[in-house]
Structures are given as structure tokens and as C-alpha cells.
Length: 305
Ligand SMILES: [Zn+2]
Image 1 (tube, helix red, strand yellow):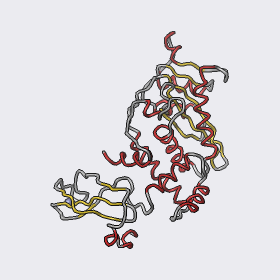
Image 2: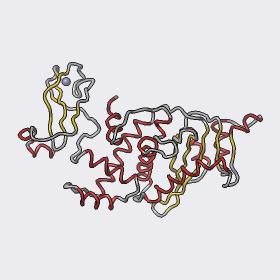
Image 3: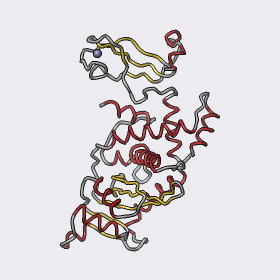
Image 4: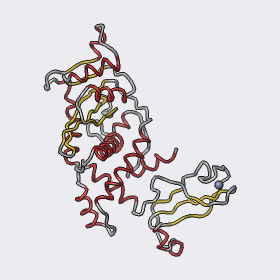
């Protein structure tokens, strides 16, 4: 690793380390033995890390705190993620970083970070159980990817503004809508959609036919765009649409999926929603105690368990 070249052992006392990582491992990463003890620290450019020694195999190791093999400052990484989600293009971020920090960075590096942390955080946040109001709105957004027309299906809980599920698809069909519903796990108390046929078909397949009168209240198709019941969702969709429009780099389906996944995490966990004055995750009872740099804390907590 290139961090070894600084000879940090020599001048580490002079450095003011902002990030001190002391995550305790459950077992030795080599032999899985539980007999581990603290064994001094490991230093690099930016971080002071607790080092551990295994009493069984005598090997030394540090724990992955979410920033393993990162050669840049953590704050730089989280700044890049945040600027991107706030609508700056990769190249604009690169220029911004160049102007205000000593460390330069390439736009491809930023994209690689987005993809990496999209995967880590999606895996982490997937199993949360948000407390929802049960009134869902489903909709789809057009996305341009490699000059083709694709779609992002998404479903929002009205009370908490929490994005329950989303699905990126090349087609606007009932199969995609079906996957959207399945990913939501729970059947909604009430579901609102636009008049797209695909939703009706998907609803029947996932949650059964609307047979009695009670069922007819649980699934409502809004025919007119001006239906007032759709106002809140229109606003949320507006935010999503607006951000997605400026997010570029949809060169292929795969990177588009990663970018959109990270976008959803930003929307649910990082961004303070003006209507409710907190993040949708907080409103839904998921309290992760994220401090000022929410990205940093979210990445840390993804590795804590
Ligand atoms: Zn060991």
C-alpha cells in the first residue's frame, strides 16, 4: 500500500488525526480465533487505526471500518458523494476539488466511489424495518441512458416520505411494476397509482384481485393529474426528477442502477426533508444517530455490526 511510503511512524505524533478508528473485531480475520488483543496503532496519511493481534496465530491486523484501502481523506470522499447527489456533475466536482484542496482527484475515481459505496450502503440499509403510514404512492420516471428511454419505478410512503422500493427497468410494463411491489415486502393499506395498466395487472398478481368493496378502497388509480390526493407525491417526485435530470453519467444500465441506488439512500437517510424537517428515515423511526457528516457516520455504522 502506498501509505507505507510516508514513514508515518516517525511523525505521527505531530499529526492531528481526525479519524481514529477503534472498531473491535469479533474474531481474527485469518484464523477466526476469538483470542485477540490490542496491539498499538497503525497510521497512514489521514487515519489512526487500532491494530489487533491474534494470540493464536500471532498475526497483526486492522478492521475494515468502511474505508479500507482508501488513499484519500475520508472527508474528501464524503464531500464528493454529497456534491454529486446535490446535482454537480463528476467533472464539476473534480474541478471544485482541484480548486479548494491539496489533493486532486479524477472524475472516474469519483464514479468508482459512488459505485462502491452504493453497494455497501444498499446492502446495509436493505434490512431496516421502517414504520410506515401504509399509504403508498407508486409512480415511474423517465430516464435517459445511453440515448435510450428507461424507467425508474418508485413507491413512496405518504406519511413518512420514505422511499419504500424502487426498480430500474428498460420497459414500462407490468413485470417491472410487479417487482416494485414485491420489493416493498408489505401490502399497503392504500395504494395510489396513475392510470397505467401495468400497475393494475401487477397489483392483482402480487396482492390479489379486488373482489369486494373494501378492496376497492385499498387500491385507487388516479385518473386526472390534477387530483389533489396526488399533491404530496407530485412534490416528492419533482425533487427526484429534478436531481436525476442533472445526474449524468448514465452510460450503461449497470452504473445507472448503482447511481440511483445511492440516490435513494441519500434521499432516505441523508437529506433533510423540508416538509417534515428531518430525514424520511428518522420519521419512519430508524434512528442511526448520524452526526454532522451523515455520510461518514452511515458508512461507519454499516461496518459496526
Ligand atoms: Zn489468528
